[in-house]
Length: 183
Image (cartoon, rainbow, N blue to C red; front, side, top):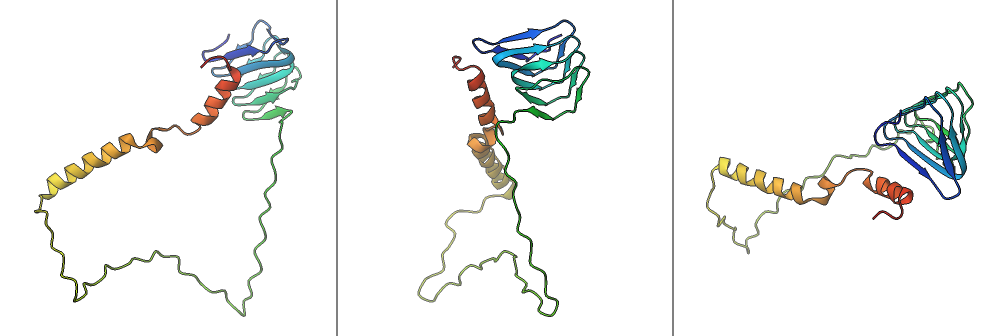
């Protein structure tokens, strides 16, 4: 059974072989590259599984959701936990070293820093400058709040940050890689 949203793609000189009794979860991607990608009998691929390259997933193996398999083979009857990365990961993730904090000397306590925001008071009018008067007539509070709400809604509807989808750029790059000729 192949669920909806599954993508099967084989590059030139590559092929995908799917045996009977295989279950491929929704949103999974199988992309054969530089050889044959074979899915043997009774394999269960969870939702969102990504299999790229060449290799074999052995009979009755169970691959958890959101697992990525790069140019690797999975033995028969193997259970791969959800969210795993198997095979050639391509690039290595660098370890980030956080410097250790220096020991605190109890005889000389560290200085405390005030991180509270500073609120500036409005400048007092100088004798040379006359005090400014409000030239707008007063508006009742209900009308003012409805006008400001409408303006805020219009600004948020036109704001590109509000309309963008987190990760859309990554999805677009993946789709362009998988389907280079579809515009």
